[in-house]
Image (cartoon, rainbow, N blue to C red; front, side, top):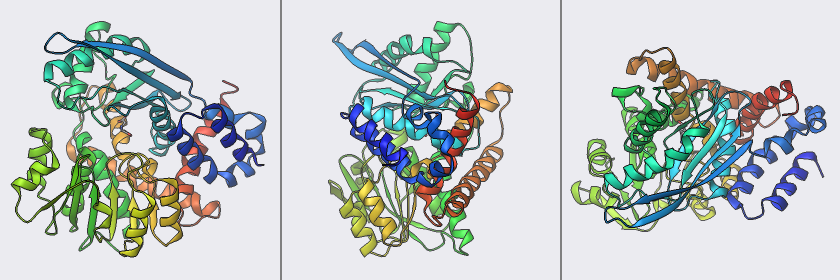
Length: 443
Ligand code: GLU
């Protein structure tokens, strides 16, 4: 058994009840075998044993009261996974599915994703099983204040900088920031994704979706191709999906699907970006509300986005939403590229099927890194007490996505896996973290 196989088995034995974490570890370790073989010193230094163990896991009670005075208790988490290359950095997810396994998988992914951005950020993730859906603003505020009343003592500008994720948008970041500032009596850029009036960065809202499209655009450009005239299927209808759709359409593609946890739409003429922003960002509505408002759109309950023929598929909803049958449908319908806007939306067997059938596949840790990269740019702006123009931030984001594409492409080539961007992204991200950990001794 190789060193990497042994560590995968060890994680399975030790963290048996954490399927998403095991999936993420397996994906990374199985693809970096050639790098590990080239560096026997890693095994002597117990590098893999250390890298799969979070530096710190914080779990806490989050009590809050609803508008009728009823008392609720949620579970809060922060996984401080790896600080070798910078302060822990990563979002806070608020969703009923949140548990230790999901946040450990997300924290683990974040370590390598952040390394790929070229910026000095370690990896972390946090959140709660609280569901902001259907709650009043006052209830969300009380939850956020209670959550931060514990979290504030564990985070800080140079320690850990949380941000948004599923369920945590501008409203939640505002309440969390207000409570942090109050408890610490200090203004600092300790959260990213802040509002523009109090230290947020222009283009942060758009960054994950735009970045996803910039990375695919760079790949297409290297092949003498572009988004012009392409049909694109997107799942999800949050921040990532909306801005991926906007940028893809600006570049001449037609985006024909979007979805939420209840259903999905087929829009053969393309998505009306202003209408979807109005429904999701202003009214906090559902994708079915969009279908009621816009002509020529079919709405279906359940899931079905990946059965629609397309050239490029961008899963932007959540983990494990693109399954083996979806992969088969995409291949059968002639798709050529799948790029993950969400974190680990494609299952391991679906990824293998896509890659084995000639589809170019970009994993989330490369393709959706534009969000956290722009969070890094927000931190820089806060530190220098300046704010950059939209064009400046957007140009930096585009440059970072290009460099991520080439880092993954070069690493895949160097280690004999040309065109395999899972291996390329994992090797490039892992290498930087591994070198830093090796230099810092057994810690
Ligand atoms: N939640 C996003 C991600 O998965 C962004 C994290 C951040 O901006 O820190 O990368």
